[in-house]
Image (cartoon, rainbow, N blue to C red; front, side, top):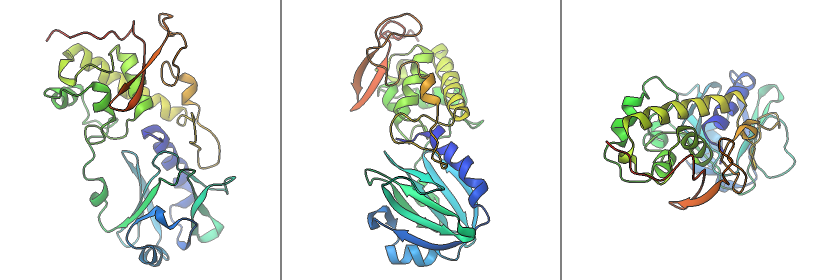
Length: 272
């Protein structure tokens, strides 16, 4: 699934090509991609509107429109937005003036679009943005203080912190030396400091590498991201830990595959 770095990359690379352009048409090859309102109303209300801006909230892309409404897109597991026709799996095309088009590619038909008057109707339950100034180590400690869930599950919970998913949670936990099954409240102050620093470093580096193309993620021009070439543990079960040489393992954490080094990330109770 595209996570924060991938969605941020898409936002950054789409924006110069679409801001200031007007929607001239909508082609839907799969009508189930529209979540709200009805398909007919979605198309009629969207056509004629100018795109005034593009922002990211968690894993959502939010397109500002001249009416004050927002077009919100969630790419889900396999979605990507292209500025040129992809090879296949096109589920929708948003036509803009000047012959510009946004192609929604989605092999598994899980991605969705909303057209809403208030973006918070979709994104209101998201947690803090991990790269914003307000997301401090102290704020993270407060959110963890009474949480008994595994730290890996918490990092992937979009209401706990927005935008982090499987890959970058694994990478941040490895960097911080924390086992994915540790409970949130068991982390010491020092561990929380390390985790906070690791989250921000891992996400920032991945944005610099234009996201990770481990499966179906593509950038708007059709290029891949290269962040996965820097992964230390994610998707590397059976390979050697780059720090100690131990074989990396994969375990389920709340039905999510989690990669880690059993030596660098021992399962222990922290002293508080």
